[in-house]
Structure formats: structure tokens, C-alpha cells
Image 1 (cartoon, rainbow, N blue to C red):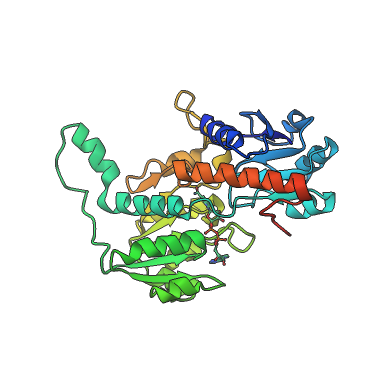
Image 2 (cartoon, rainbow, N blue to C red; image 1 turned 30 degrees about the vertical axis):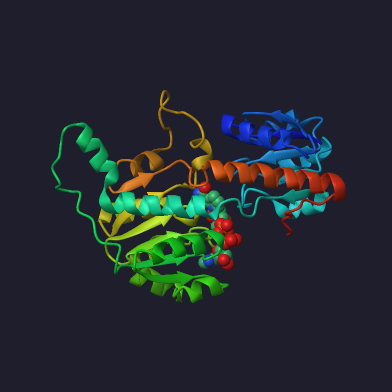
Length: 333
Ligand code: NAI
């Protein structure tokens, strides 16, 4: 199949080319494009049977209609989340949508743990200080994770893996999820309503998808019900957190620390080098001024193992569509 690959970076290209050249691979023809897919870049899909897209590509009704008019029949997501696709429009147009439901829950869970430990032990500040020859410890005080309470919002693949990592620390694990996970129950996780989780947790970690129900799930009211000085981690999707409410809670000193790998307006920032041009987003820039905030640019997934798994599952989606007209891992409305 002819595939237009959007938001391509060198590592995407390398992983897809390697998987496509492997023995037994179908040998799809990739057109690698650095541009993001949106209404303005739709014409670059001309001649493609499928588009291969990432988290910040836009697949609203207008874009899908434009792709359909060009003959595109498959949207192959290189990610697990699918909040960027208008699934109803895709279904009405008869377009298949496939995703990579699981590539490495370990990659994201381990990165979430890295954020937790970095913020708690102030590694980001210690790193800068030591390089300046400043070995003072004031301001670097942390706490033992052992004996603390960690609340996990969403215990699917990533949430479960995160809980499993935390069992090694000897902390109390709380979770909230409309569908409790028996594996988590078996490892001692207690399911409680969100409001109780927020009130009891020293660390709250978000591992749920972005849906209309989880949009701004952590808003001003949620921040108000969190334990004073608690840590919030978000490696799910940016819009699960109301960023302005987070800034207000940081300014008030009620939110102890914030670790983000995702940001609700990340599409205009992440996956590119803006070091020479500056940041236009004032809300994001304000976040970066807090010493107790660590932001990574949507890199939780970014391990060698995860990239290889994303590439092979994407090829499996393309192969299945070529053979049956359906992706191997379809998303149904
Ligand atoms: P999953 O589908 O296995 O699990 C999601 C869980 O969230 C499910 O158990 C579901 O019942 C639960 N959930 C849904 N609504 C909820 C709510 N209102 N409150 C609490 N729980 C709720 O998904 P997986 O693989 O664990 O991924 C979770 C999310 O992580 C993805 O949807 C994606 O947005 C994000 N992600 C972020 C990455 C990164 O690089 N930062 C990489 C991969 C995924």
C-alpha cells in the first residue's frame, strides 16, 4: 500500500523502514512527511491508500472528508490514544481506523515513576546546582515514598504497570476506574471514588484516556479536594488537567509539585525545537517558572522497545487492511 506518514521524525522513519524491510514484511511504500496532518496538509496525501499519524495530527471531519476525497481509506495511528480522530465521521465515510493499543506500558509507567522520583528528590534542581558548584541542600528535601499513598486514575495497561512498579516501594495504592482491574485488586490496590482518592493521596497519577468525561477531570474543584502539598503527575493526555487551575493551585501553594509529560495545547509546542524562536504560549511559559514543576515533551513512550513495537503493530494494521479491509487493531465507534 502507498502510505503517507505524517509528523515523521528520524526515529519514526528508522523504525518503520526497519520493520518494513524485515524478512516476510509486505513492503509498503512510505512517503515520509515532517508536516503535521491538518486541513492545510491534506493535499499531500494524494495517491495514498492510507495515512499514518501521531498524537498531534488532526483528524476532524473536514480532514477526514478531504482524505476520503483523495482515496485514502485507512487511518493508521502510531499511538494508543485516539482522541484526535472524529470516529463518527470516519465511520460515516467508511474509513477504517487502526491504532497501536499496546506497545510498551512499561515505557510510560517507568517515565511516570521517573517524574515522581525527580520531583520528590528535586533531581532537576540538584543537577543544575552541582554543575554550578553549589552543594547546599536547602530546598532539596524530599520524602520517603515508602509508607505514602499513591492514587492512580485509570488502571488499564499503563496504570496496572505503574501500580506494579510501585508495589516495590511499600506504599498504599489507591485507584479509581469505572472498570476495576482484577490484576490490580490482586496486588492490593484499593478502588475508591475519585474524590476520596484525591483527598487521601500524597501522589496522584493520571493514566486514563482523554474522553468527554475526563476532559478537565482535574479542575479547580479537584485541586481543592487534593491533600495539601500533594504531587500530581500527568502522562496521559494534556486536557485531562485544567492547566490554569493547576497554575492557580501552584501559586496558592496547595499543589506541592506537578510532573507533566503532556499539555493541553502541546500541538503547537512539542516534537520540535523552539529553542531559537521562544515560546509563544504564555500559560505554558508560566508553568516553566515554578521550581516544583517538571515538564517533558510527550516522551514517556519514547524507548527503543516501544518504537519497534509501534512500527511492527502499524505494519500489522496495514497488512490486515490490505488483506481484509479492516485494521488488525481497529477502533470502533
Ligand atoms: P487502557 O485503555 O489500557 O486503560 C485506560 C483505563 O482508563 C481503562 O481501564 C479505563 O477504564 C480507564 N478510564 C476511563 N475513563 C476513566 C475515568 N473517567 N476515570 C478513571 N479511569 C478511567 O489505556 P493505556 O494503554 O493504559 O493508556 C492510557 C492513556 O495513556 C492513553 O489513553 C493515552 O492517552 C496515554 N498514553 C500516553 C503516552 C505518553 O507517551 N505520554 C503513551 C501511551 C499512552
